[in-house]
Length: 286
Image (cartoon, rainbow, N blue to C red; front, top):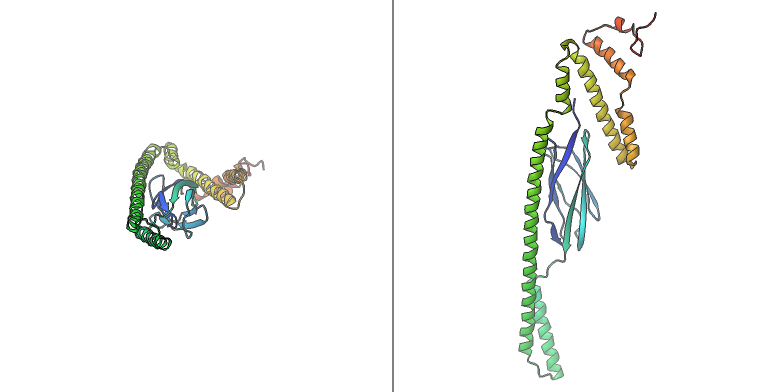
């Protein structure tokens, strides 16, 4: 019987700083606590101006491409991932959008055109200013603007490289934490812990205990699914938890009926013998 697992999102954006008109593209992978890829996970990415839905591929990978270009500003993105049998997980990413730099060719052309216009104006008005010197001044200004732009781009690239290194360090740390968590919890996970428990019980009734274990695990899976459906239907978290508790509860009557069926199934008893006991598991008086 499957045991509920934890999802993890390992994602990155094409750049933490982009220009207006570009698309903030996100690529990543969905894994579980054992670092195994999780295919078929539902992924919802909430951009500032639209929501994009996707599903992880067979190797757990996904790629999100928004349809609306970025505008100047500071933004945050939430990534929500769900799948039956797993706990929901959310990740937050931030990015900056800058004004797109001007094309150096267009800067020079605009500067030269303005210089030519100024020369024409000076000739019409009979001014004595040197038109060549004016044109050179315009070109020098354009060159200065280009140098400032290149310096700004170099600073942005440096920041982007630093963020990339930091993201790699965080991702490597996450992978190590997942590996350590797997090593630390393997001995105590539900199946291994229950296996150690039933190992000391007479083998003739071990199947009865495993049947009870499987029932409770299925109850948990069904309860988790019902809770997620409640949240998707816009019910608040308290109502969703109440639904979870109701679905996860295993009544005494249900356990008694299960034990009766298991005893008959594994030939520890028969239907005639089980009929001697009432729904409370007590021997009938008649």
